Image (cartoon, rainbow, N blue to C red):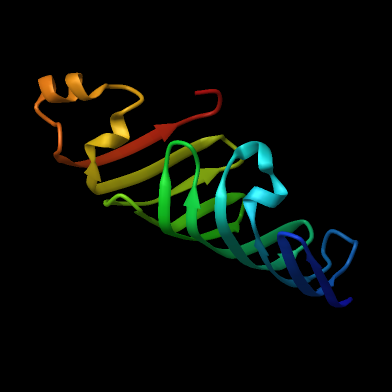
Length: 169
């Protein structure tokens, strides 16, 4: 039994409690919450902002289930700045389900998605919808002159995609 675990440090705050046994059939009941600053914990990523993860682990040790929510605020790297990002994830029966993910970009636009990944086979299907993205997101692939020739300079971009993959693809 984990009555309470609290860790507070520079760039990390973590709390956890619950119980779980060592045998494969032992029930699990663990909860955790973590808030961290990526600039402090992983400076090599050159990322800023804050991330918060809340997770609950249940089921049995041989077949765990996980429910988690993630929230990122004011996240930025050299190439992308996100005002708010959220995701809700579940794992059960060797299947990862991304129930919903959403990112509001600082420069405008939104990306949303959902999907699933089957651990046993490596198969996955992901649905992505993007609306109102600024053409400047293409800057590393197309300079302003090229975007002008394509007729998208200053435009907002919308996209819808379904990505399917299998093991090794």
